[in-house]
Length: 182
Image 1 (cartoon, rainbow, N blue to C red):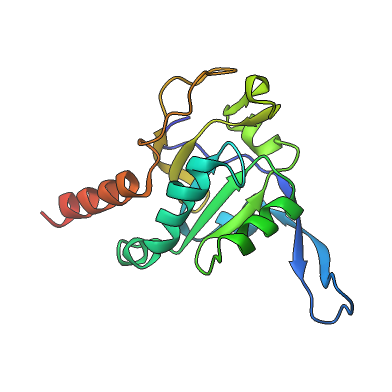
Image 2 (image 1 turned 90 degrees about the horizontal axis):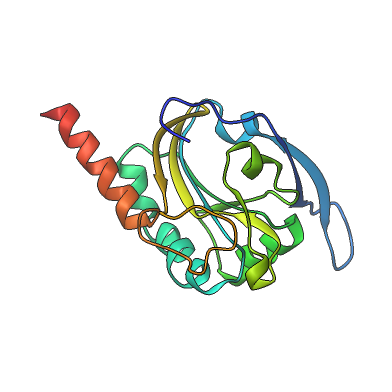
């Protein structure tokens, strides 16, 4: 993947809260498309191996959540966290992380991740097919900047983290803004 590439058109199966539904599970299915998330917006998308996993839950997702105002100041409209997990898992993780700013996108079947060229086997960890860790700045559905962790391959023995960190993406945004104003 690289800058200038249009995101693949995919339909995501999501569960959204609906107060008109009574009972302990007030959610309904809602299909959302790539265009629903990305059209007409400048966003940060980051994808990771799995909800509730250590690096994802301790550093990457909380970093983007806490830094949301800084990203907005650099012209970002939204921040999306994607994982090859279903909507139930992603919603539970969002509640667990007390998210207020970052929105989660469930890529339950891995279709988007596969079309991005980022689907890898993580059978060595018992995960099955998952996303390689990456981040992107996306402007109106087109990749503006790409941040991929090194070593993309099936059953990688490690989980590299740094290139796709919130700090790295924010630094890029600030440097790009400084270049434009210089």
